[in-house]
Image (cartoon, rainbow over all chains, first blue to last red; front, side, top):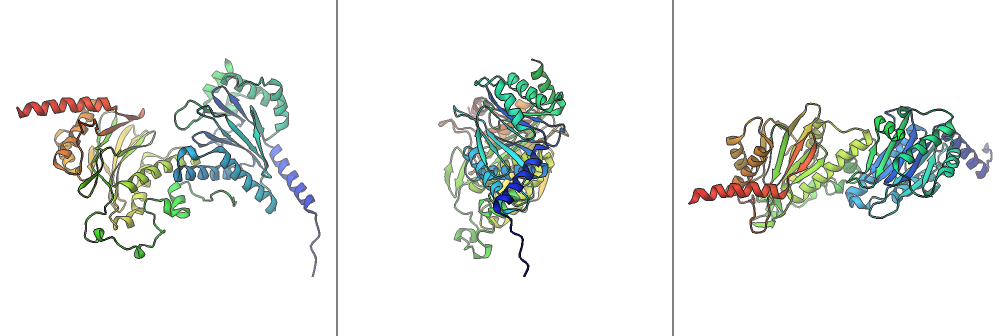
Length: 228
Length: 276
């Protein structure tokens, strides 16, 4: 009987991680940043219809970087999870933490059990209402989950963007226009090109909105905010 | 792709998803107990509705800017009053509302499910369903409830939506088998529906103004309450009045209680003067 070649688990995991990281780094970056009135999501995305940022529930938004088909599936599963929970219990029982946990479990299981890991990095952000703090979770291809403060970056040259943002951040949540210009300049600096408002996908979770707090900003609004 | 810790499904419909994976959560609850195993309650066999609260008269009228949808506040259980303040008109999304008649529990559940259904679709697909699409989906949900109808749990919706493409308000009525019919002017359902329709038939005109449409809706409900035991009129002692919503291009707007009260005050004053 022929014996399969032995490959150490360490080697397998390392190879998988390298493969996934390579796929994610190929894309463009997405930034989530806390601002005075909520959370701002800015993506370098030339397509106006294939979204990287999307609504999950009343206070929760999703952003995905890497392979579109893979994070799109994750996004849909997240919406199902949230809507089912909200219908079964009540709208206030849907939390970003439980959703981020579900994603982390799923990605971790797929990473260790499937031949091909998912080439995705995702963000789950929840705007805090009634004095609650905001929550931002960054989840990687292997299921590792990081609770971020002030800002979070996924996809592309995320480390470089993070360094640029860290230099600029002042500790206090800035107003919307400052947050947006900070995000755009960080994206431009690392990508080494000028990003027109049409090439940006921008959405916000606004704390004081009634009901569903997610709103996409049209190009005209982005231009206006950047000109201030 | 299998996601072991999150629900899997391929379609954009929340109702289909729930029916397949959590059938117990649908108003029909079909699949949980096989229909033939279900012992029929005595009351269902004798033709008397099952002893659960029933919601009654609701109506909708078109006017220039859109549709007004209104309902009384009474729920009955046999010959008893189960609830004096039940809400039968629900906002479903930004441009549609639904009013219900029938077994109150499953009715309210269906309204909630329909709200989730439309929001779910919008989030997954990145755009809203068309007005026609929403009406058809509701028809499928009513049809799925058919097995429960034989147990006396009828759910009968009246759906109104503002069709942004056609720039007009639309009214849809349903039958128990899920049949969907569009009404061109006005409609009323429930135990007092016929009485309300009689009033509307007398006074309806095309291109009603908003105040006139509201007044007609409230008058029709008043007359229905006059002739039908299941329909509640304005309760002047407790200050409970029917509820109404306007569905227009600007979205859904609740009609304030004070406005409804003032319409009834003047109407009652006129009727009282006739008696002396």
